[in-house]
Length: 293
Image (tube, rainbow, N blue to C red; front, side, top):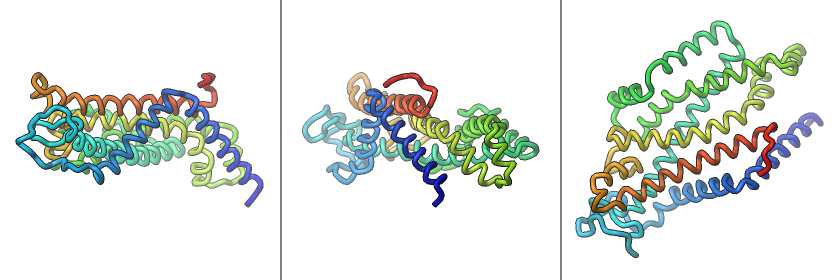
């Protein structure tokens, strides 16, 4: 292992330590990260501990208020609200992480190749981006959902297809700026291959942008999935979904507001925490940030 490699790894380690220190010193960001970690643990492990089924109905306990047996009450069919919220949060997190992973991979690859190689590659790839952008996202999602059976995987595939162009444009713009810098031209002048330049020198200079976009995008995707389920064209009942629970509870809001209020609070807190975490990451990863947290 060369001294240069060791120096590079030490610099990366120091960078991440500095980022973690900035994040932990920001109270709002740290609280948001802790809340999201707690929600993730409950969503993953909760179904193994809850004594109730998210699908089992009990017409003797319809729309009950919170009690010792049902901590957040029951819904219009007597199903435990807390259990369905746990399963709904797990669905939302799975959709958000899956869509953002797919869009980040596709968008980053397209943006890297289009920005670095330019010419015909840039023209073809960016025209594909423009075509997707030219169609209103909501209409495109509704049209594609009409072609497939509604479900978790169809939602993941459709939202990934709709969202990747934004990441591609973002990455392409950064690559166009970075590839003209002196250190990239110097590396190319000594015979470094395109793969090495892209993976070892350009990509590490834009990973912070990708991480921030990934985090902020999860909230957008979760909101999109909840909105589609709320409209009845996303994840359909009886499969638990926060948006579906809110939509169904709206019909009984005057008499039993708890049916929709609890999932609404959960959804709102998740989106808010993701936005705060994304903002905190943006500040922590920005070397020019002068804020002291």
